[in-house]
Length: 265
Image (tube, rainbow, N blue to C red; front, side, top):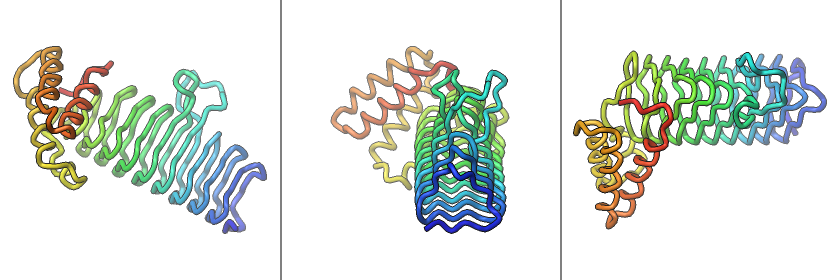
């Protein structure tokens, strides 16, 4: 059975699974669903049409499922969807979506979201990401699996952050960041491949070497954007005998080819 502190305020229509723990003075609204084993810290507020999976840990004073900070919002029943095994630390703010987008904000599984992080309306966050203290992402941002956002970093609305990439602390990202790349700066610029992170995640030396070639094509050879895309496809074809490398180069190409805001370059 759920372990709920006597001072918590929980709407009778909220759906709380077995094994959920709710701390002192937490507030849970009528449209909230919480999966088994999730822990809700003291003074946290869970509201809106919010669905939370299993075994999440929500820190004290977190604000989960609040209305989007969008002046077009008119109380539509948009959603916040949170997966499993996420750590969401103190004073984080996670907002529901808007009808101008897909109508939901979504956070995947196994993410590490530190104190004072803000994830705005209509964002889509993958799996195994790290948001360091006070990282802030504006509306409609998409964050790929295994991405890392440094402390006090800020991301402009509609930006996409590729998988296995990394943003340095106190950086401002205003354009898309391709997969596997490290960027930092007052206006974030690329500073090489996230090679150490790729090693830790089991990338082969052949794949890392191939991605270094891809990085050089995009950033070091002085090619136009269109010529760089063509050269990346040529490299993927060249690496067909190394299927893993070819697949990763193709993902790198496809990400930049789909960019609407342009890439950090």
